[in-house]
Image (cartoon, rainbow, N blue to C red):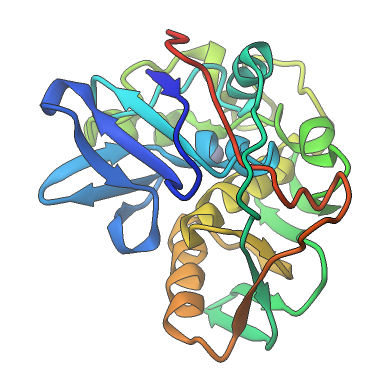
Amino acid sequence: MSIVPAPAGTGIVFRRTDLDGFEIEAISRNVARVSYATSLMKKGVLISTTEHLLSAFIGMRIDNAIVELDNLELPILDGSAKPFVEMIQRVGIRKQRRSRKYLKITRELEMREGNKFIAVYPADIYSVSYSINFPHPLIGKETFQVELTNGRYLRHIAAARTFGSREDEDAMRNMGLIRGASRENCIVLTRTGIENGPLRFPDEFVRHKVLDLVGDLALLGKQILGKVVADRAGHAMHTALVSRILRDKTLWEEVTFPGKSEDEPLMVASEAAAGSAL
Ligand SMILES: [Zn+2]
């Protein structure tokens, strides 16, 4: 995989270099399959496990980049967004002149499915409150709340790794996913503990759910201004929220902040790595 700079207004676009450069935009319309990971598909061409890289882009406020890939699955690396963040930090980000367009939530939307819940409420900044309740002695009930401003994504979210049990791993392999998976890129839960500690945060599990949510909400195609609350949700509910928001234009408006300060980076868009091979 390599990330290359893109002009303002491009958004995030995946390019399959093994398929004559076929392009798939990272937007809700192209969401294909959501189970253990989020996949995009266009005209039968698949890109799998997009959420960690897209999460890094949002966390670093990168709006425009082309992601070249010679396979259908993004590299899982260490199971977090940290390697992507570091790679992008190494090559740098360029501000572009066009003002960033935000999707500002103006009306609440709540969705429920059994004991799962996800909602978005009007707010001037992007924040996430995520709760999980996972039947495991190390996890149980965890809640993490964070405002995604002032570098908090990089400090508190980016390094949180994905997790799963041995049984999940077998199931995913049977689906042709995580072919690169090993102890190095996933926290492996055993019945009573973890196989490959230590954890990077005591509540790394719920932080990773925030990471996934941010990555899935990137499929809105714009940075969001709103408060997102999720309880035991997952990729399917995250992406369902995205398509509900986009379908109902009474829920949001598009705003820009011309001439404002650092963290509401107006004229910022992105550049990314030219040819940083992983
Ligand atoms: Zn994940």
